[in-house]
Length: 124
Image (tube, rainbow, N blue to C red; front, side, top):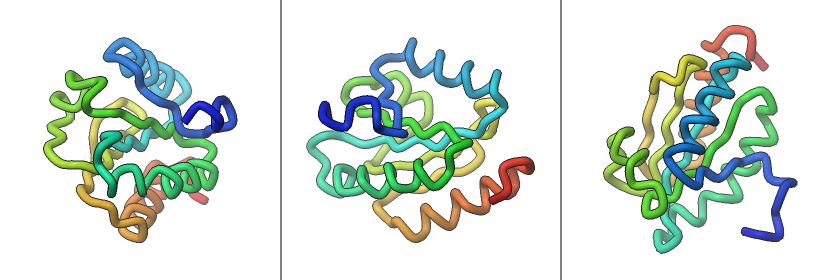
């Protein structure tokens, strides 16, 4: 939403180009990425936004991206997203290493946590 503006730790991907540039940025900084694929009409997906925001502030060294599948169909197709919400974890080379479908905050937190630990220098 607009009012969250720049305070948001979650970056909204507006296009295929912006996706590519976020991936490059993460690669250069050596930081892993967690992506939330959702849609504005999908209630469970919208419901996950505040949780995702909270998760993002828990892990400042991770890039958190939000993709609206209707706005950026190419990226959703590339990541083989078939249902919302889908969460994809990418390592610092931009390679998907884990994917979770459904609004399950505890499971997502668990996966992100072990993902960060396995990324090595980001152990919390």
